[in-house]
Image 1 (cartoon, rainbow, N blue to C red):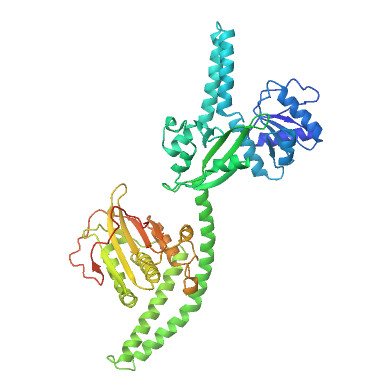
Image 2 (cartoon, rainbow, N blue to C red):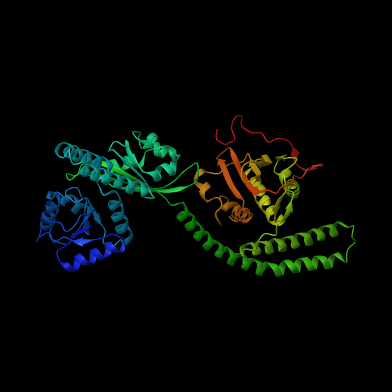
Length: 520
């Protein structure tokens, strides 16, 4: 890279900054030697803290020289207005280190000339060489090698790169983009860049259109609907020396891992807060609950065992012990207590959990249908933790149907590698607004804050499922109900259910004909 500055100190500072980013940099003393750049370069970086007339003079000399006429000219410091007034290509914000480095890398990677300009220039020079030096094939080989080297560099970049016309027609795509989206290069070339957004599952205006409309680079995170991968998409215009937009560069960077790490960090912070809250609740509630249970047990000694009061006292003892156990389990959970894995019959656990809520379902006028695979294989799971997941999902469905409705619980085996047991819990309740779905498993996020929701149930369910090396996902539409799917690794031998005896009706869950989605 060539660095132009008014004094040696400023030039040395910029050269050192570029070398820290992995680029070689040399000062061009443009005033003393305006017609002889010291070396080949991919960028010209100019210190902008000089009078504007001097800037214009420097940039004019860069544009006039054969070696540098097509190089991008970047200003260090200054403003977008200064770029326009001087004819430079871009400005690097001196204060924002990350943005400074990002823009240098982008301009250096594509060298501001792009495939279209490079192909035209190489084609023109190749034609001239073939006519003028027809007998010197070795010179032509040098040109071909240069093109091959450019293509190799273009394809070696780990980010997906697409070069388009100003109208959005794809002219070139590198190997990384082909790997990202799984279509051959021939399938991309000549197509509209909208094809990229369709592959990502996005509808509406393409980011390309915003770049053309504003004349400014645009970027945003895009989540691929089919795979859940997150791409950071940057689209920037490439201009001629007269400021005309010659094409656009689309850069697709897979930031899935980075975003996952960010979410994990945020989740860890919430877990610390959850641990503090749970520890406080457990400390404050354990003693009163123990006293309540002990007093009730003492009273049981003084009343006839068959009396109504004895039955009530036994219920008090049982519920106090149950609350104490729930507090203990929640405390174990936030302390990251590992699951106690045992072989488990999922169908039997579902039946047992539904039985616990039978009176609540009956009072809420909810029909419960269990469509359970009769020969479902066993899994290795923590019985208490998995029952907590089921209770949370069933209770969530109960609250989603205040006017009554239908709850369907289905089990089945998912083929593939690895095989999994899938538990589907589907209700006909009010549904979840689409803007809430990305946060539905976050700690302390609830859509029922005004009705006593705590935002813990689904978050705990997700953590338990993930601790079992499983997955949980949600599908919902307002007014059409909600469907949760829990997938867990299974073991080898199936468990045959001879006597399903359950409070739930045994029947297939109704599905929309020809579809397995909630959308209309």
